[in-house]
Image (cartoon, rainbow, N blue to C red; front, side, top):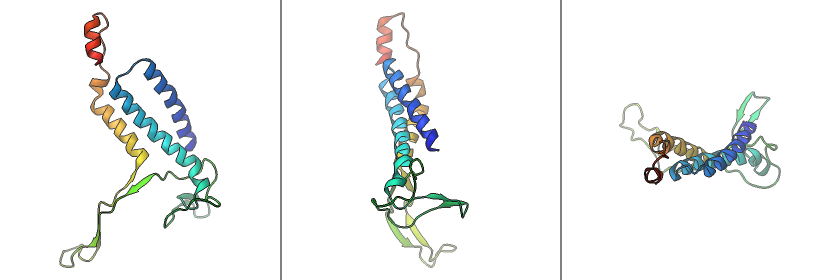
Length: 158
């Protein structure tokens, strides 16, 4: 995956320069920059995280599966992995309420409840936001500019 990310970031660098030279719209460039930044963030994580931190999700050949970690990773010392084999870990976790369901509720009574338990990956959020915005505003970002009439062309670019 890391090699794929590396190729994608190199290609993305070339594309951003090309789009900037061709003066694509500001909204389009923001979306492309979000996608590029997310890909670059994931690449940096997968390249260096395993060398710098002591815990991460890694493939254990003996088990034949990915093995996770418990607790908070600490920086320094020997990492858990080598160059290009780190985990992508730029995550945010915001549990707002941790409690248990009341015992009188059927099926879930007494079970633990956590409000807002998703874990967000910042880089993936940037990529998703860029792609979704491109899809929603594609007619605005990809419209053809009429170049025969300079006044119309300038109005359409704004």
